[in-house]
Image (cartoon, rainbow, N blue to C red):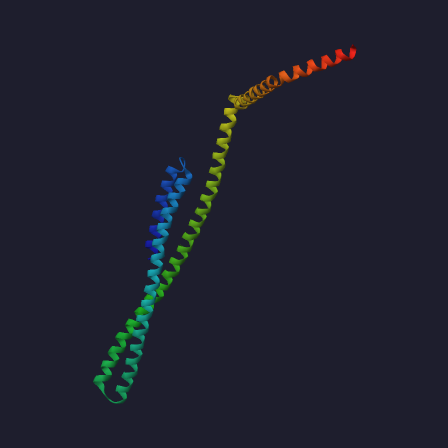
Length: 212
């Protein structure tokens, strides 16, 4: 089981590294996303293997206890048959005891092996989870760097365009405001011209009257 898992893990890693080597130069975040998707799929496969191994361990445990209980029972029955001088029953019980004991010993060994394999699988499963978590964090870091790079590129683009056309938009806006102010002032001057002339005429008449 562990050797199969190791070969599967090595094969997956090799494929993913090859894929990343080809793609990371073009888009490292996209390559990392693909790596993570495949990694999550493989993690789910390993999780199912771990669950299956737990079930196998439990099955071996149940079969071991059943066989051991029957072996102990037949050994006790063999003793009773021997004391009762029942040779045929004693021989049957002894044979049954040996068969059940052999099965119990085999189930015990299988259970111990399953436990060792389960521990190995769990360790590798935890390693895989840690690796994937690190890759998720790496993706966050790369996304942050990508955002900064794009922001800087956009700002540099604006600065370059502004330097090529120095304040053209601002100059157009300023000219528009000046024209608007001129029109407002001209209109106001024309509307008050008659009243100003009338006032001047009145003041001049008053000054003439005072002189006479």
